[in-house]
Image (cartoon, rainbow, N blue to C red; front, side):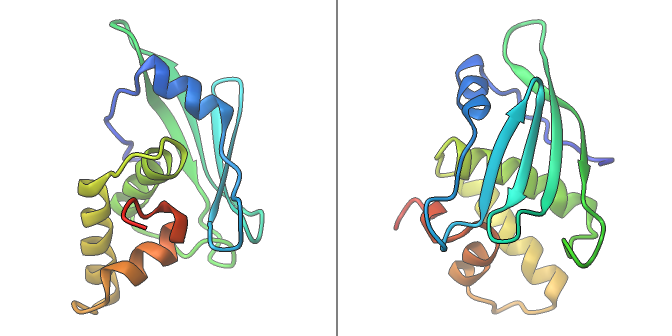
Length: 140
């Protein structure tokens, strides 16, 4: 991926990310697991890997994503926009794995999806459910 999230993940965040996340029901869209420093994000229904990110320690503490790859086979993932992929990687880790409200990231997801689809009036809830799943909405 040419663009990576710039967030520095705390050591506590990293420990939670390392434990992964498993979709609890059909409304949840993501499974996340780690192997060493690598974090894999797979769609829960199909099992298809969409993102793989390698984390590395930062001198002042915490970790950052040093490199990542995204699936480009349109049969497995329809994403083709580098900015949108960067946003999705950070959003799944923040909202799904860490359970953060991620309000700014969610707003950016809605804007990005509306812009890409050409549908300025697409409902925000529908967009978020399609990308993240029902359980990922902090107001639910």
